[in-house]
Image (cartoon, rainbow, N blue to C red):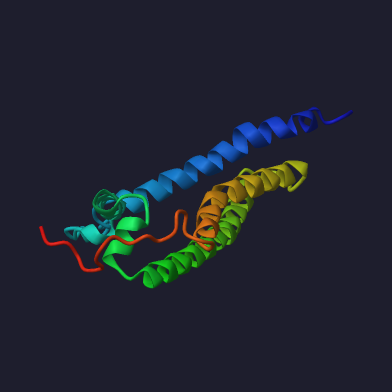
Length: 174
């Protein structure tokens, strides 16, 4: 008698396994990033996390920088030497490309562990469904790391519009 469940491998992988793993990942990541204090399981008073460790603080710094200097390089070129701005932009580009590679490889190992754990926990056989889940996650993780890598790659060439500083390289006094 043929196995009727074999016809539903793709359905089970797409609608059971992948959402379960993604939901678990996002819940744990959101809790780890946004909690205000580490959990105190021994009954002591929890100590507050530093504000420097919260993502909202770093987002505030990025927004303030872009508000002050704008999204182009010209204002920064007026503040610092153009050669330094070009070198710093290239260095940041390499850092972003490296971060994209590290994000892809690190998340590949992490999600491989999560997929393996899911299949062991549910006592599922490591069959075609296991391979389908891995292939889908490989594509998702590649697409997830791609924008960061492309942003870094765009910073490695010539600066768009060049670095055209304003009259002085010293900060403006208001």
